[in-house]
Amino acid sequence: MAALRFDETLADFGMDALLLRHGHVLAAFSGGADSSCLLLLLRDWCLAHGIELTAAHVNHMIRGEEADRDEAFCRERCRELGIPLSVLREDVPARAKERGMGLEECAREVRYAYFDELTGGRGLIATAHNATDNLETVLFRMLRGTGLRGLCGIPPVRDGRFLRPLIRDGGESIRRWCAENGVPYVTDGTNLEPGCGRNVLRLRVLPEMRRLFPDPEAAVSRMTELLSEDEDLLEDLAEEVLPRGSTSLSREILVGLAPAEASRVLRNMAEAAGGKVPEAIHIRAALSMAREGGSGSLSLPGGIRCVLDRGTVRMERDTRDVDGSFQREPVEIPGDFPGGVIFEDGFCRLLCIPGDAAFPSIELNSEENIYKSSISVSLCFDKIAFACRVRGRLPGDVIRFGGMTRRVKTLFSDRKLPAGIRASLPLIEDGEGLLWIPGFPPRDGVLWKGDGQRLTFICQFTGAPPELFPGTGPDDCTAST
Image 1 (cartoon, one colour):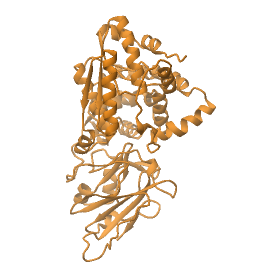
Image 2 (cartoon, helix red, strand yellow; image 1 turned 135 degrees about the vertical axis):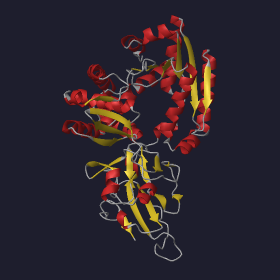
Image 3 (cartoon, rainbow, N blue to C red; image 1 turned 180 degrees about the horizontal axis):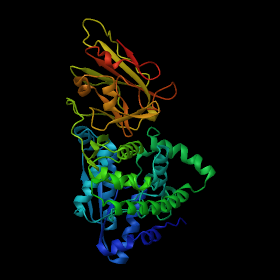
């Protein structure tokens, strides 16, 4: 019989105490094996302890009839179990397009906003993240060069209200438990498609890993729990220096801290100012600026900047870095985009050509054709974190190529691009950051070199801005005029 660590996990991470104190918990219920298992375990535990249990399902309207099937299953299953269910139907593809977001990012935002609405922003929410999810997350972060916080994986309890009671149990153990206990569930067909990076890891890498290590989930779970203790201590030390929510600190204090403390203080300041979590290269640059003294500023991801002025280091919104306005709404490019023109305006048009589809027949310098020059690049489809989107430049934008992370503002400045081109040039990004800027090399690791499926972008211009072409070639992108 498959034995799960549900009760042990509740006790070890104080989830049982939270449940008893709040008296109510909302279970996120997708209908899959993990959430079906969690719902039944929570029902039995809550009945035994006098806790109110409700459930919530979100139909993102992404998978058509399959999504409707999942919703119907969840309704029927909750009726059988006597658990009140709230359902939200949200056209996530339309919302993501309207807001210029990726599908997964938008879907997550919709889900958690709905959960907050149902719980008043303060109640407990139980989600079915498991040990296999944690293993995949840690591997992805490790291969991207994460720090200690990233290696801590998925926290069992987040913000004192998001509970993951199955975080120590692997996906296979959960499915076996469901089979042995007659627990029905539905299967998301997209989890079996090999296209996205996480599925490649799940379907190809993990089976090979298990040939060498029979239970990698358990090993990584032990590691993340140990590292989380170290991370918590370092965070406590950082908060003794500067309470969370603060955005400024004496330069003298900052430069006197140990590197691990200083980096956490700067990261917390950036988050408090509304920016993204800075990468190591940003932290090092900010610390270098602080050590040199004087005055200066540094643009950081998420539209903020680090400013050194009069002996104080502070984080603030960056309103200086945009030379003009991108006249188009961000446009999403899903992984199944059939190919064609993504957008077109008076400055340029951008085309996306998947696989070996024929390139459009264009006489670039004909009198009838308004597009007099073009730049193209072929990327490796399997190395792109879909969905992609096309947008204008934002403060703090960076792209990594040639082994270095480069600020887009500096690239444009070094190339002496006119303000109008800076404001109008389309930038292509995926879930990991900027992929390609026309006229510059693509991000390291994504260039198509003959293996795997390719995805080609072509940017055609109504004029021939010569500033965009220096330095391009067959090793990075191709320019033709």
